[in-house]
Image (cartoon, rainbow, N blue to C red; front, top):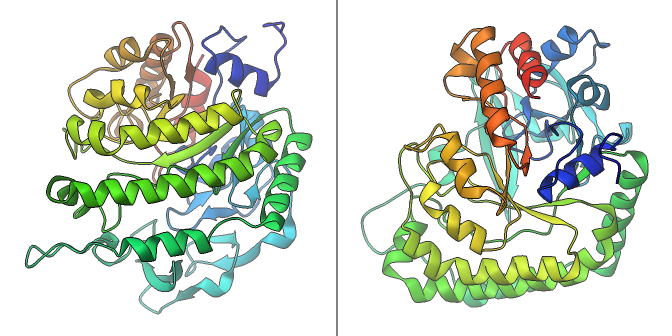
Length: 414
């Protein structure tokens, strides 16, 4: 492979294999934590001098815009998304319906019937969670939708709720992919591969299914890991069996057409510490993650597995690597007491880093354009040593970020 004339896909894969590419690979919107707010997106399009268009919102809870190909090209990005039946690799106008969010934003959504505007400026979205329809609200001062209690009410009276494991096993059996589901996903991925030379980031039915947020949410599940470890182990065994079966059925069909799999969004960190101990990770998560990643690598050794985990997770990076993940995101070195240099030194040639390009809580929203330019240049210079580094922001680009800073961020990443 000639390193002086790489396609975007070759550039990404060379990087993820810890080889030197022709230039730093970049991502915007490959998955739902490397994206851009639909409120910021039209301003970015205008600042790039591109034709105006309504944003396509593929993640309506976070209100993320699906980046168009001309925007990706203008910013030098190398990744397209395959996001639960939606992609930016080619146009599918029939998948989108126009909706106006209370006069604040006109955009395309998948189903306008899911939304309703109210006189106080609030928009309510009906979201399906399993067999329930749960209302999410976006008030006029917000740019995202929220569920009451964050969807995770906590009561410290009485016993913590534990789901019926037999019922969970039955639900997962009922959700098993059918032959026609697999063929449809295969043809979708094949069309994406044939439409672009960018790397294909698959966000779909293949994922670990387990996380510290677990059943009951981040307020409850870590406590269950302490008080009911046998229940958690039995739960993870049921889920792992289902996940490995899904991998066996689907990945063998789609692996020629994808490059990265979004395996889990499992936030183990707060701004300053871990949510649960490394010992909990080692006993109740590691054995199952090893099996899941191992099955992916057995069936598709060239496809990379991707873990998103926010916060101050530096103390469990070794365990994440031992779990078999190929890529760690969002590289939130701004959380905790470890610098981006320490993150890189721990991960170098062991696990690829994807993100971390600028401090998204201080420098990007509050700093000057020169501040952004300098920090991005310094961070990317170090993180790309020995490679294994793909550039993006630490998490999504929020609604308030000026387009000039976004353009500066991507142009400074070299």
